[in-house]
Structures are given as structure tokens and as C-alpha cells.
Length: 121
Image (cartoon, rainbow, N blue to C red; front, side):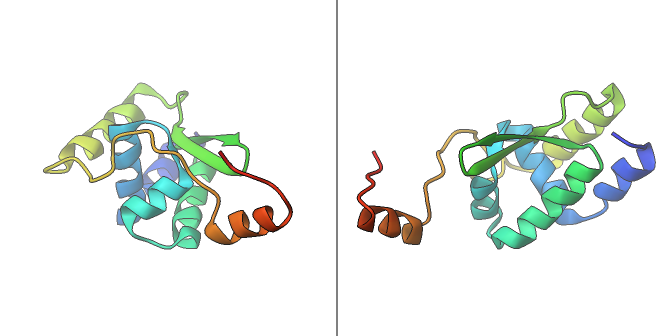
């Protein structure tokens, strides 16, 4: 994390706070799960994740085509405490907050792969 100012600036947006609440409640999540759960466009969620990543609030892991996000494990204890309060401040768990779920290739990609003779399990 760069500075406390960068951390709190990243938390200034309600969408970013919702993303952090989801990550707190459900652990690591694929970007596709985040934009579906939040009911926002993929570019909008990716833009917000980019801000959180630049501030050092989230860490990523790539798995094939998909990028998975989690709360950065190297955040100081005070930052984890703030995120925990965000996650717990929701009156009820966010729908789809439980981890898991697997991302699939978009339908267009699957069709083009099938035309090329590729099969997905």
C-alpha cells in the first residue's frame, strides 16, 4: 500500500466499497463474478478494481483468461480492520458474496472455439 491517503481515497467511491465488502465476505473472486454480483458493466468494475489495485488495497492472481482479486494480504492491521467494518456494515450479506463459482468463456468465444474444433468440458 502506498499511503493512508491513497487507501482512503480508494475507499471514497461507493462501488469500490461494495467491491471490498464482497471480497471481505466471500474471499477471492473472479472479476466476472464481481460484475455479475454488482450488476455493473465489466469495464466499470475493472476500472474500479484498477484504482484499488493501484492503491495496493487488492492483489490479483491470473488463472488462464481470468483475473481473481482478493484483499491484499500485506495491508497493515488498521487497513484490514477498516475493510472488516465495511464488510460487516452491510445489513445483510451481499447476494452472491459466497466465494466459488467458476467463470466461463463468453458465448461468442465458445462458439468460435467450437468452429475451430475445440471443446470445453
